[in-house]
Length: 258
Image 1 (tube, rainbow, N blue to C red):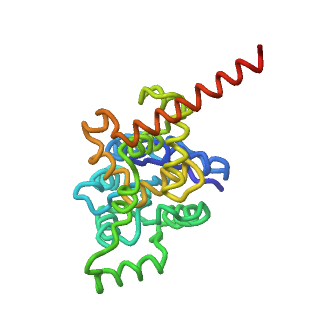
Image 2: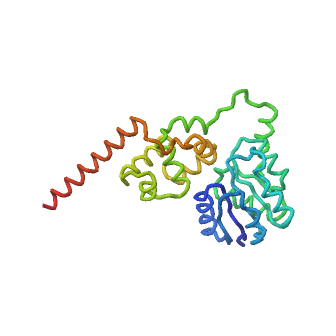
Image 3: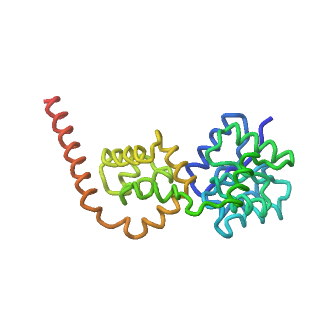
């Protein structure tokens, strides 16, 4: 039997994608919403059986405050956190706030379903290997942990960072082009370069990777007012090259129709 649930995430694209996947598998999704800061009021009013709570920053103070309120006002609602791993402090904070489970952001849909079923049945929905990894990290913390999000961010130009943020917000090529004041073909080229640099095959994968590694949070900070400034010379040269290609194709198409 399907689960009556809600999906909330700071990134709407991820919430809607997961909600769509769960609907196709027979679950009743009451809502897919963003950001998680407004989750408590929505969950309290809708009263689902399970709430999937996605966050890229589980160790940030206050991120699980909505879960505290949900448990206080709707104790029958089981909250399962979708977050990055390894992050032992985040896992501990989630359970301390009242979460019934913690699942990796990149878990397969079957794993998410198993966690939902366990949480609804009143069991702790967390994989043993996840706890083992968390305990291992707490007992033997890395001296200089690999910051994957920062590493990936350094691979992108400021223009590509802006494109990634727009992709994560669910904008298509037309909206990206309009928002950045560039040609659709140029926007498409930027998107393809972002996918290539991140080593993923789709926009959804790019958004999921960026959320899981914390890249999106860093991108928002790094973009700031500078995102609206003129692009660096390399970006301007690339844009000019793309525009020239567009004009060449348009001229060739016009000659074909003469």
